[in-house]
Length: 163
Image (tube, rainbow, N blue to C red; front, side, top):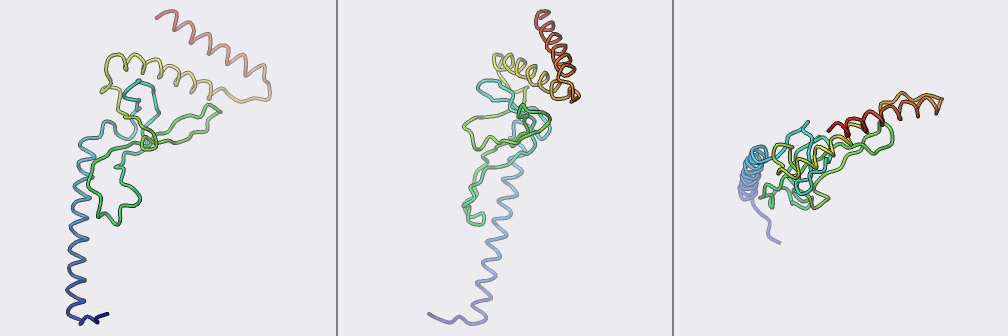
């Protein structure tokens, strides 16, 4: 193995710094493109682009860059994904999911097609009903809870009949 001089090591260090700076510029540019091309932003309700089903509320917009990205050397795409908060159906607990672990596209309501918008409206109704059920005051009396649940269910059924 050859031993490099102080000057040679300094030049290699400088070249490495130049590479790191160029990678940072590229990463920053890709992040700007993500912001430009994202189909939803944090706080938007997001939907499955194909079916119109409500996924949840967008909590994070990110570019999917594999964890094996080797310090940014292979980071060269704008593959946009979304983390979203959804209800798990059991009380007020929330869980998070993301689109990068699934093979689905997601977008805000305005970007859906007509049929998907119809499905989305139904999905929103189910979501809103679940939120109301989750907010029923928890009491020791199951009868009180069931009365309130029945009242909400009847309200929802009446709305459906009116449509």
